[in-house]
Length: 445
Image (cartoon, rainbow, N blue to C red; front, side, top):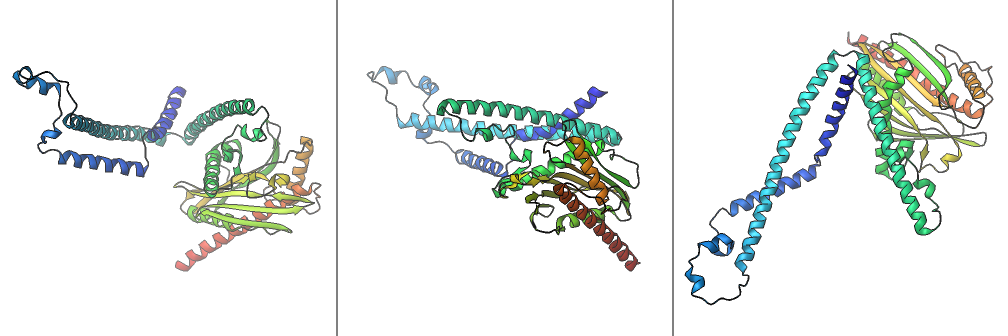
């Protein structure tokens, strides 16, 4: 049974990737079609009887000549004439046209076979998915994501070996260590893998979308680990730090609420709050850049205790038939933000998922994860400080702020205060959306 699931998952990935073996660029297709039309017109213009200069001189022509033509004349060296040149050229062009037309026919046939096979296999997979339980579908998605991660890891290792070899060759060439060798040996050749943004506009936009799309793929695994996937809990949540296997400390906030509004209104309200939220803080700077209607990049910096805090985030809204997702991921380095690495950078990400329970009721699930800055301190001390912050700002479910709790770390206090402001803005915005929805309903009845 497990081998069948693995085979189905690999088949699904294969069918998805197979389409890229055939060029899909519209300009290439248009140029190829235009070439075929020119060849067809050329064939049509040459269907008339050829002139003597167009008839190729071949061995068959020589064999059909009367024998007396060569016997009665003295032998002389044969000189190439324009007839043979033109004939050879026309024959070669004819073969080229025939080969190109045959290739076109073959490509069209392969496309038709691929479309038919993909449709049949996709129909079978969709039928099997309809009969599968949510956990079976989740297991298949996790397997696909695992295979993708393994392939990406192998690619990065290969790139590391290739770049290390290149650097070694450059060292031998210049006899001294290049100044930028540390940067060129970065195992992750794509900067966005490390949540870094370049200066070029096109690269920035592509990186922002790539970061958001990868966060969407990681949603299901994160929800499973946080016990939020297919959770039957109606209302609830928690906030707690935990130490990961690599020794880092992860702060996790999770909520699940049942709201009396349709999914479309709920998701749109969350995105409106997320897109327009502008934090207000002392000695702070905030910007917001719209990448498209459903993607923004926001920067926030604040000076605290002689240190600059940075919280720059990619935010994106995904509108799907069965759910609506608003997610964000902090960027760890931005070329357009000078000296960002010298300050304290927030390493945070999260998801807000709206799923319909019925046409007028929506389950809203929120998961926020933050990695505490590693400054060489004792892990237990970091966990204790995080618990202080949870108590101070009332992050636990139905908790209340307690100003009597003193935060010893001003940087952590500033980041937590920023998170509390956003939580309050989200809560107030959703309350307003619910009130407006029910007011509109009462006005129409």
